[in-house]
Length: 169
Image (cartoon, rainbow, N blue to C red):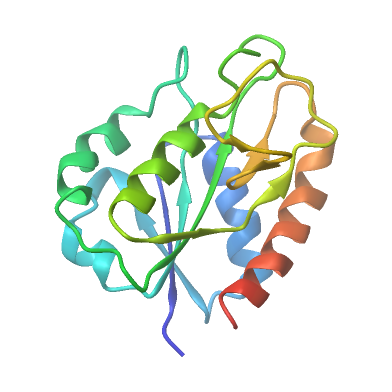
């Protein structure tokens, strides 16, 4: 079995906290953490299954380190890759673009032929709109540390269990 790549900024607080829980849930023998701030296309392509930590910045933008990797990502053929995306947002302060970063990244992954997995229900969230929303689901895991932090641990555990099935690990 090939290892799963977990890509996130090691310099973030909330995304890194979520990554730690994901690593523990998968078991460190099955997953490798990679700093998204130093990411190369070759590193990205070396994994069959990928998990991306993509928080939403400001009014619905990708963080700088992901935005800087997008040109390299747009040159990759992601056919055969399964990609799961998680991200943090604030549904009360930014209800019009809650976890947009997850949706932006999902769009790019799909444009390059990758398969986005790990969809989760929008039930239990209160927001106006999100680029991550597809019907009654998010195209990834939406976390809100400002308003629903007590729910994150369970949401992550359920999501990892779902990914283990979708990744067949």
